[in-house]
Length: 171
Ligand SMILES: Nc1ncnc2c1ncn2[C@@H]1O[C@H](COP(=O)(O)OP(=O)(O)OP(=O)(O)O)[C@@H](O)[C@H]1O
Ligand SMILES: [Mg+2]
Image (cartoon, rainbow, N blue to C red):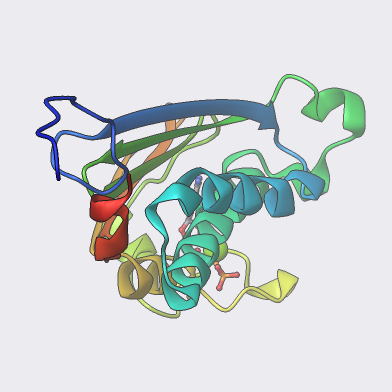
């Protein structure tokens, strides 16, 4: 016979579930791969699909790459100059919604609207295609960019993840 259990569990993906994670790392391109894997690992308990994981990794990778190469112009700096340059990622899971914030304290963006246009880039010489923001917009449900010259840049993204029902019935 089934017994009634009155236990509140923190079930990933369910309403009321909350989980939070923050990381800080040096603004060097080696850390871009680490950052996207860290965020992917953080959402793993929600049983995301391969496509969802891939979308999240792409979006995080674009935002972190932008922080490193545009925010801090890391390609033009020596290792010691780059030492103080940090990128911050703040992830929040609320129910089945992932929020990701990627923050740098670099040079900031003068014209956000223009920067977000597909194909717009300020580094055409460095093999940039100007598609980073377009990818973030396409692969996430929401994208917001907050920036001011010399004040750094914050990229806020969110995505709703599908959840598998079996978790609900776990004993
Ligand atoms: N964190 C940031 N700090 C300063 N400027 C930024 C930042 N992120 C983006 N930008 C500006 O916005 C422009 C557009 O960014 P986007 O990612 O769309 O293209 P890109 O980085 O130039 O090229 P791609 O991402 O295709 O390699 C950049 O060229 C840069 O001028
Ligand atoms: Mg980019």
